[in-house]
Length: 237
Ligand code: SIN
Ligand code: FE2
Image (tube, rainbow, N blue to C red; front, side, top):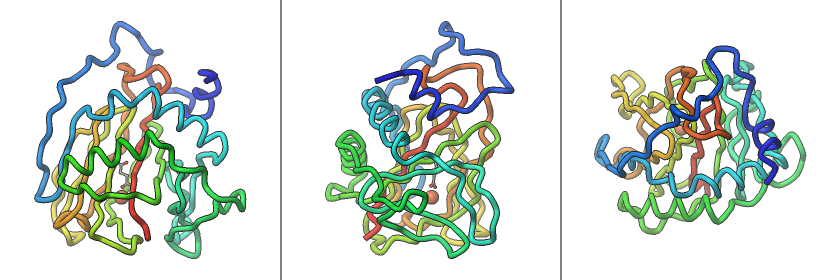
């Protein structure tokens, strides 16, 4: 895999922070898990062993289906750049939020869901008590410093008995986990490179979001300088 190509396709130019210092690379952390709410589990570090293959597969996917800033139904440009892989992809435009088998920018199917994504998602889901999880959609979110995701529910899927599996790579993020009503005050959780959150069962429809990402001078991975990548695997149909 051409590292330069991946860097170019995944990363965004850095205006804010100093260049990566290899002496300050993130230390490996012991795998620990924390229950955030009934049905919502944070599995720290469990994606770490998958990172090389995830990034390799990701580079191929975004070379084929480039990351893009979609528009909200009200016409605002989303700060997070998105793409998808798998039989279905989540899209947003003036017509609303929905799943589509075709990438609207290319008029072609999304790239297939790689075995690495599937294995990690199924392993995480099984650890969280969802042994039968078979995702058919993976949303890829790329956050540059300043990008955020407002509180929302994942409710464009047909079957809420399947959980959401959410993989964090690169820059850390503050994850907001709210309740079933928008007004419920969210708790805050730090998500770091290699962490996976699974939320299902009674937490499946909890509001959640990401606070604006901050640049850091500690680089989790040389191919993820100044960006955060989130992979969100779902069963849409
Ligand atoms: C999402 O809710 O789609 C993404 C959450 C995240 O970036 O961790
Ligand atoms: Fe979400």
